[in-house]
Image (cartoon, rainbow, N blue to C red; front, side, top):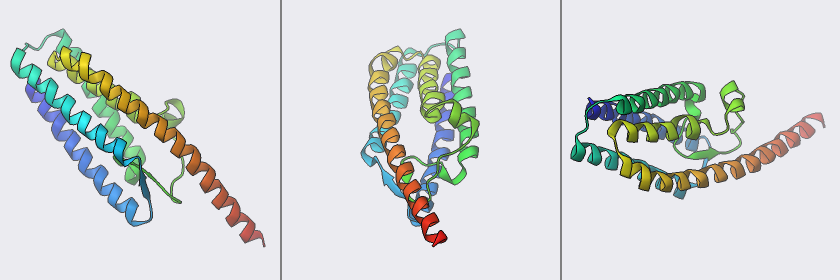
Length: 183
């Protein structure tokens, strides 16, 4: 049951990755610029290593599905449901990296106004903790999870800086267009 659940989540994540990469290509085609490429690569590697480590711990320990695994399963399921919801909200803006450009505008949905960085706090963190609980992967949680959190902290910092710079830049562009239209 545990390995089957992990397999389903891996397939779902690969499907979402394919969609995100297609959206990146579309956005780059119309002039979007990917920023923080190095952080994205580290995040992808860390994600794969964490999954692989949890799976290895499960194969070695071969735990039974208990309340611990059940809690992890519920966390994973809620993270995947949130992933689906977030993908629907973002549509073509759902990407792996941070793509910015003149077409970038902040998203005015209740989720984004209620939770800063919902992808990180409502999907990635519950997904990783849920996976570790499901797999009884305490070593992955103890040793790899803090490293991943450091990578996510860098991502949050980059997103905040990029968002400030882009919103200011786009508002200047919009302001310049309004002045030109009035003349």
